[in-house]
Image (cartoon, rainbow, N blue to C red; front, top):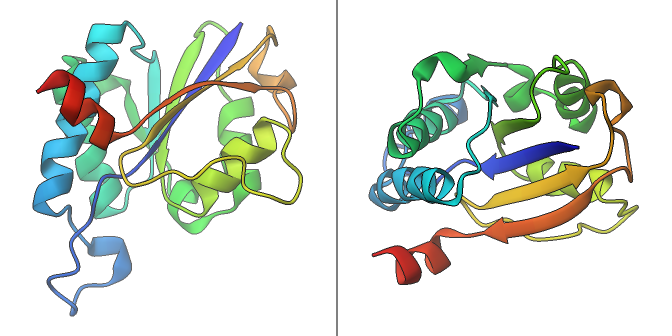
Length: 171
C-alpha cells in the first residue's frame, strides 16, 4: 500500500510587493502553522520517507519548518522546480518516479495544482474533490504495490488536516 501526503505551503506574505511570486516568504501565521503540522505528523506517526518540495521561498520555508517540527532529518528533502512551474502531470511524474522501497511520500506545493492533483488521484474528473487552505495536509492512499501504478482514480482520500483544527487540538 502506498500513501501520498500532499501539503500546500503555509500562509505567505504579500508585504513586499517588489518580490517576484517565487520569492515570497511565509507570513507570521505560516511560520507558526508549518512546524505545528510537522508536530502533527510526528505525533500521528505519518512521517514520510521522502519529501519533494517546490523550491519557491514559501514552500521551501514550509518544508524546512515542517521537517523541524516533525523532528526529521533534512536529508529526506529534495527540491523539484516542476512543483512550482509545472502541471498536474509533473506532480504525477514525481510520484510515479519514486523508488518502490518507500511506502509514504510527501509533496509540498501550490494551489490550484495541489487541489487538482488530489482530486485527480481520487477520481474526480472536472470538479475539485476538496479545498485546501494554506498548510492543509491531505493523505491519499492506494493499494498499488508500485509507485509507477499510481494514476488518476487509483487513490482514496484517507484524511485531511488543516491548521485551524490543529491549533484547537494541539495548543
